[in-house]
Image 1 (cartoon, one colour):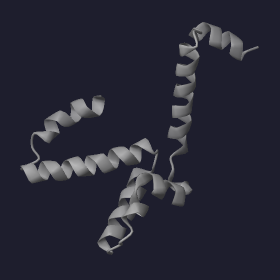
Image 2 (tube, helix red, strand yellow; image 1 turned 90 degrees about the horizontal axis):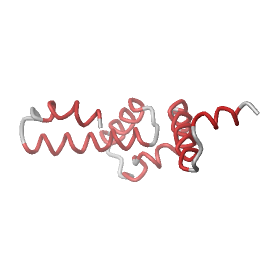
Image 3 (cartoon, helix red, strand yellow; image 1 turned 90 degrees about the vertical axis):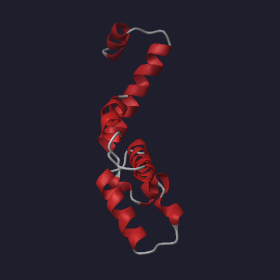
Image 4 (tube, helix red, strand yellow; image 1 turned 45 degrees about the horizontal axis):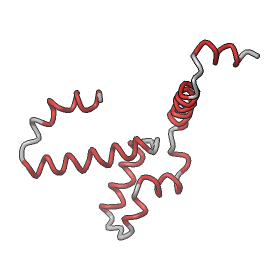
Length: 107
């Protein structure tokens, strides 16, 4: 939500309807890269260079395909954090409180 709130003011000044469409496309690519825990700058640099060189294989530029071909460019710290958050949610949904989990962790 924070990104939407921050971006709201910026989106007022995209210049034109076509500019807004281009911005929406770029933000979609960035959000997809973020979702797949990619190093954003490496991903964008590689994709833009390959597009500029005239690559015809657009599917290889999709974030999930790109991630499999370049595992060294995945931000592991983010993936680990997401796993911990998911684990906490599952634990809470199972009806356990935070205090019970802490006690169980030390047993």
